[in-house]
Image 1 (spheres, rainbow, N blue to C red):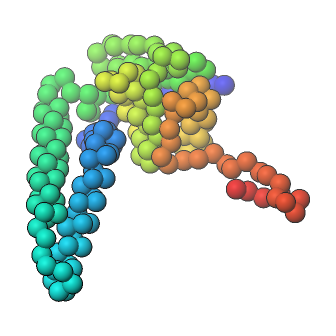
Image 2: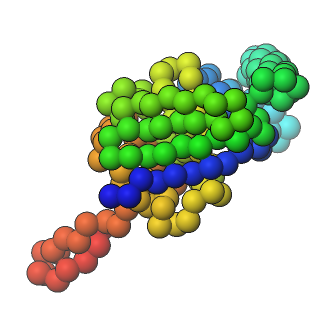
Length: 192
């Protein structure tokens, strides 16, 4: 296997995607509760407007409380993104080079001469989204690899390499490999 080499600069849109993906994963339960409360508030308000039952305000108040929490959470995320973009040592716009070998990931920043090598066995987790790969070195440090810098074949090859090396520590939200061919009860070959 030839090493896969990608040289790129992370832009603000990709960083936004990573931040919001992390927020949704971190606050998944609270966001599901918010949706349930919003639905209950809507149903109570609509039922009262139609005269089905008297107006019950508790779900509306809970919805407003969760809405304020959500707005504060989003505001903090945006503030953090803007602070990072204005820092002189920001990784946004900095040239990065990633080289995926058989068992290792090599990271270089040509501008400042930084280099690091990470064996796949030490990677914490990798997510594949529709527009980028999020490579967690540990729970607090993540590297972003945009899908725009690779061809479809390179992306499929990288996906398979990571899937084989990381097993359940690789999760894809976008691409899937071909479904295995199976025999149906009638003996004909088909796909899942």
